[in-house]
Amino acid sequence: MLITITTGSVCTTRKKTGVGYPQVSAVIECADAAHGLGGHIISDGGCTCPGDVAKAFGAGADFVMMGGMLAGHDQSAGDMIEREGKKYKLFYGMSSSVAMKKYSGKVADYRASEGKSVEVPYKGDVNETIQDILGGVRSTCTYVGAAKLKELSRRTTFIRVTQQINNIFS
Image 1: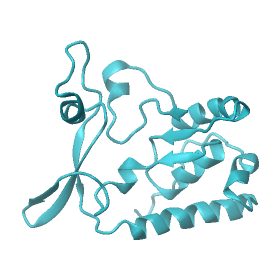
Image 2: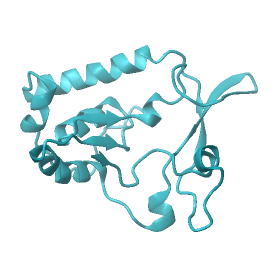
Image 3: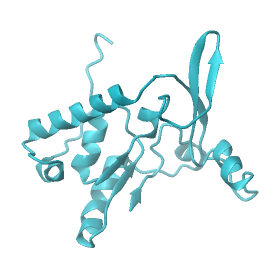
């Protein structure tokens, strides 16, 4: 089961329609039901750092999509753009007008584009980013006492906070 309600980095559904749901809450609410029926949960959207990936697994996801985190690398899709000596790669949401024109030929008359296209700074090979994500998830498992990734959701307790990161030296 794909769980995504307007949290992606290039998604504009919440702004365009007023409809949305917090990603971690959506995963938590769907995981037990899906797993009880032998299904799997794919958390799609909202990840901006390795800690977000760990939270998705902690909420019960079996897979985590990380489009925005992986955009801009050699291995990611998107046209390379050069401007003023800097390289960028095009990244777009699947409900954007770019995607609809590419895969359906046009934006259907009965709907609006609910995604945007952005130019992401070129990041080179994806290996360093993947290692950073894996390191973050491994550390999360260590902190909560999960010997295996599958145990993470049983060892995780979520607490509402108003500020996740200390930005004093950012």
